[in-house]
Length: 129
Image (cartoon, rainbow, N blue to C red; front, side, top):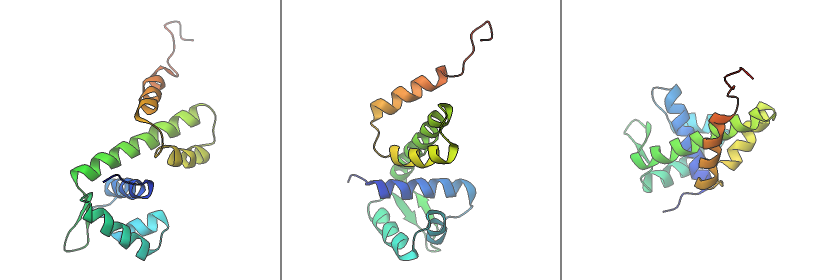
């Protein structure tokens, strides 16, 4: 099953929250994303049925291996694209918002080219220039 942008956003949010919280619940996802509880509940059901997340008897959400793989990919794209945009002078808030949209549509080829290019930026020559 191909995951849509909204599903990727949910997985990325769960990933981010799992770095900050001991246990992630649907309510945490709703607050973070500023979505209604029923919308998040429906999305969690779809992600669980597609085996991207697991939900235990206490309602705690964890990413499955396939969910984690997607979440890490999207999160990395967000970080790298935000950095690229801020490095070229985009306001950090605007860069983060734009990265949030770009991260879901950019091809692997283009993203890998950006990643390869980024380490070259900002390196100084041996002369210090």
